[in-house]
Image 1 (tube, rainbow, N blue to C red):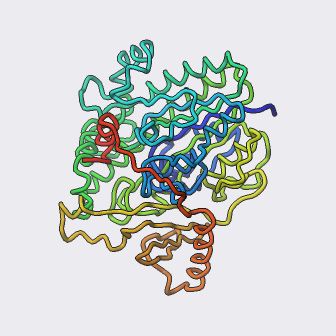
Image 2 (tube, one colour; image 1 turned 90 degrees about the vertical axis):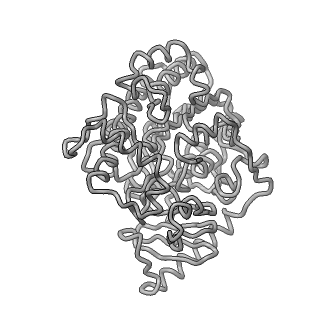
Image 3 (cartoon, rainbow, N blue to C red; image 1 turned 180 degrees about the horizontal axis):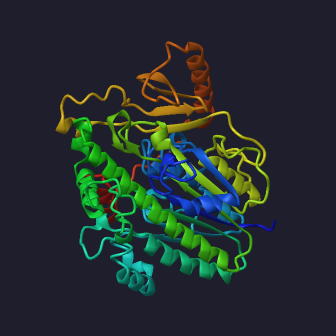
Length: 461
């Protein structure tokens, strides 16, 4: 195999058990399943964190969240850290990144090492190009929410694909291999599918797709208040949320499938394609919504597809892997030494456990709505969780818990003290080897444009 091109596609908030690969009752990701059929499809990729910034930081550096402090106690890549894009760049790769999420932008230094970088937001949409914008406006009712000024309603995969196809066409005329990283913002909350997907999964609802989407948007805008008061939604509201989330997944899957078809039609040479989620999503687990506070499978277990990697793997599709393993493998295939990263080369070995981390949490927003909100089970300090096939052990300065993967709300330390002790030792060794913070962690002030998009996504008030 010649030095391959690499295309990595991340879908925001993609929970594994809501995908076809994850065995979901709805066929939400047939395109991903078809791509996996010719390569590998993992349903137990454990993300390095529960949200975009620390998870993307781990993917694009190869290091643990608490090592770089990205999304833990800092907002930007420290100067002392070499990014994955810089590694590919040094190896002679053309590097490019197209991002729809403001956490993956110059605001966090995650653009470092990319020859070509574009962040698509309401303030930068003009950079998508006239042809792409014209196509988007022509299809704004079927591929987005129609003519509305509420930017949180709009879908962006059609814009992403328009720009990405143009860039892939540029790569076709170049002799260098390329590393192209794409971050789609769907199916991130508020779960407002484009027009043609509104009624995809509404057969069992007593409301229309439009009504369900509007209810999902209302819940999005009032999320903290709803969580603070115990997520007391009706069965119909829960069903509406899931239907709209699943519709967003299905639409984005279709668009990713179209992009991959376009890629395969070009004369690009050997190309490895990776498709995954940066983290998952909560639908009532621990009485929560979205992806804050906890590190259970709902927010850390994501699907992952690899196609075009000719070398056999040392792991099966049912084994636990992490994003850093895939990136380490890609680096090694490209002739880059990735032995200093936290990943393993999947062509040579697998892993016994995965580790996810989450930064300190405050609960002020929730307490504003309900002073009696009980957050004692969620930890306030930095939290690290170790996940095996059977267990999840987690620990912060405040204490620890042991859960069976089949029931991640019942602490079973007292029933299985020897398991807790063994996993505690494994986690301590891992943190000592991989999780110590480097100096120079950066806390950046986000620009007004970044703040506006973060408000749309519900990260800021």
